[in-house]
Length: 188
Image (cartoon, rainbow, N blue to C red; front, top):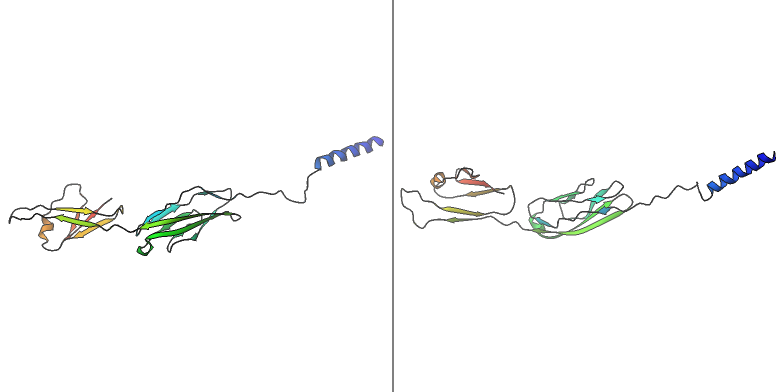
């Protein structure tokens, strides 16, 4: 009987020893880490041309993206962080932006300024000869300087005799398109 009591006491001591310092009444504490923004903002834009910036952030939790400060018309996809905006002429200059990235517990912010520049207008210069000989072909050169909007169309028109347009020759492979007295040139 004494052996049984000793065995029970030793067993209780071992169990107590294993459970010492364990508090089963409170759950373990999980420490949340704030999100980290890894991307560098695009700080320049051109009036009339779409601006994009993909905010890239990392965290162990699901992230939500929002704009705390933004110019009119700027949007952000709350799930992906993609910012889109087409600035207008009244937004030429400095435009403050503040992005918030949140994991629903902690947030981080990325403030920056987007400097919007005005579009450079297209200029056309025509180098006309000073004399013409009636009945002979006369060549002239049209110089175009367009803004840097890739993929846009340059449209120019001539006033006066449309025979000038009809008699112009275009090199093979040119993208120049004539319709009446208007020609269109796609440029990149």
